[in-house]
Image (cartoon, rainbow, N blue to C red; front, side, top):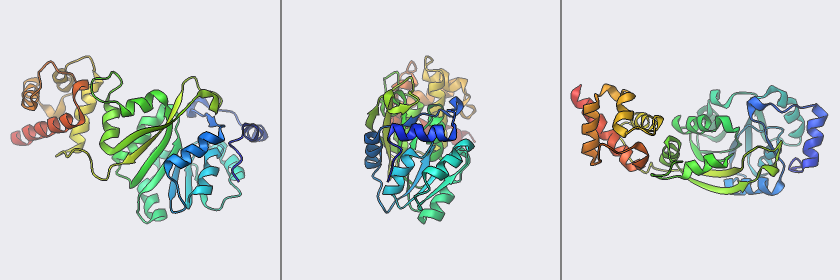
Length: 292
């Protein structure tokens, strides 16, 4: 039975091993059973599922996952936590702990070997400093994923859901929405963690699209354009793209592309929807291939 949602039990484990929280790994352990149960519920974990957990910490959520899933692989970067996890997960025979950096793990291989190549579910209480690289790594590598249910900083969760025109809208919003449907399912106050973070958190579920909401001739080029558009938010779209040297196009050529899109040359990237970025990317692609 899962016991670590209870703060008293968490403190006992930490004291037993003399564990020191490490700021560099962004370690904040959940100590609220209701939130843990809600995460499992919102992730839709069943006995048919293979689940990848990123950053299990002392195994709090891992225990809940083991009781709900067919199999769990928990990837933990901090080697000091491995003996603790061996202890706290000793009652479960459907879990494997990997002492690895998730950014270096071949997740597609894991899915092939453990889940017959079928889409897996990812559940995580992510360190805030590495949220974006992990999410983008999962999506851009085209790993077979059904959904990603993650605890992140509330501000980051809000950003993933934002649309054009908002100051929170940016490259992360567009990337997430291209690959998945984002939904904030639980908001979590600092008091639910040990130690307490300085900011509020939220659990967001990213349900992978079966088909992307837009089609593009070159996905990589579209994301180059998106990143360049938001790298210098205060600049016009034309200046941002020409400063980034997109596909070696001159500023005049970029301006022609924007005019072809039907937008004024004064427009900024934050005003464009995903559909418009896809269209602009195809226009740029056509200009480049025509000139080759």
